[in-house]
Image (tube, rainbow, N blue to C red; front, top):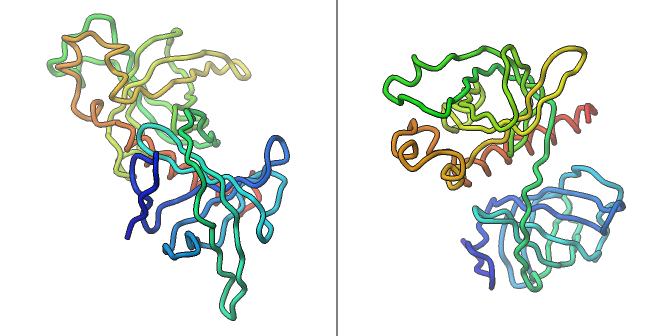
Length: 249
């Protein structure tokens, strides 16, 4: 079951996750819910889960709904209606208003210790047997988001260095075994060197690799697309919810 809306590149589907924002500015409250049904009165959603912020959801309050798609995020205005039943509260979002496309590339970042192997990719590469030719370094991450991660450095990396990353977590989540990254910052915490690495999504590989290299890049690197990135965002989003439930955020 789907709901097609003007200006939205893909229809809404059952079980799709929505972000709901109550109020604006520094008073905003952020919630997550899933679509359970489409009815004449609007969109039936699961009980919204609190993520962060100050404003509580109230009956008939105006909210901003955010939908994530491969190309961007989209948002529209709605109102939330609450109908108590004997089993649980019944939540409906009134039919969405005009949908706007927003460029949102800010990702939730959480502390996450994960085993990782990284290797610097030189300016000139012999891609035959690349896995054996590269100098792979064992390390751990400090934090991660859908856009990148911070990792402990056991070798020197410089700003704008290209790297390949093997992250233990990724195959378990159906993500490519190897992703490409670019070093965006380096710093130190108590003498431990740290690198902030941005993941390179496949449609941006051409910005960092030559045409000849693009034809010979490892297949997993070319499979980290927007859909895979959204899968990672969803996983981290779920981890954030669990951490908040435990009072760790």
